[in-house]
Amino acid sequence: MIRVLIAEDMHMIRSALVALLSMEDDMEVVAEVERGDEVLAAALRVRPDVAVLDIDMPGLDGLSAAEQLSGRLPDCRTLVLTGLSQPGNLLRALKVHVRGFIVKDAPAQTLTDGIRRIARGERVIDPELVAAALETGSSPLTARETEVLRAAASGIRTAQIATQISLSQATVRNYLSNAISKVGGRNRIDAIRISRDAGWL
Image (tube, rainbow, N blue to C red):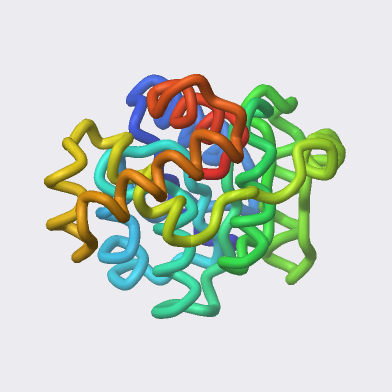
């Protein structure tokens, strides 16, 4: 039996995933959580073979949860469910040892086959996502620019960002200005939107 953990914040989708996998003779859903920051604790408790993670969850995003799993429970392989609109996330997923990356609107058979293949040690990546990621490319932002833009995305002011990441306000403004320019945004809100859509944040 392939022991599966499901992490999805939308109750109806999570229930549908549990029902779908429960119909498979060789799969058992051993845990389901609705927040990204609940994934690691649940996985350490039940020791799944495969964790199916939504990319967007409260508390912690799916890729950060996958990174935690890779560090603390390397035998658990991860499969991330994503939207096609964020191809840049594929590159980040590969860096955190995600084994599967599938779009949410793929047929149900794609998910069940993907779980089986990942459990066998294979890698499963939606070819459309690969094409979109190659077209979008990797993030033009430096690590610090990404950090500052991500902090700005949480809605805090420049002074708070400066305090939070131990920089001067002038330096924060410079990083924000560089990030806006690099992604082709009109302002910080536009830059955040562009970066999120590309999967760079």
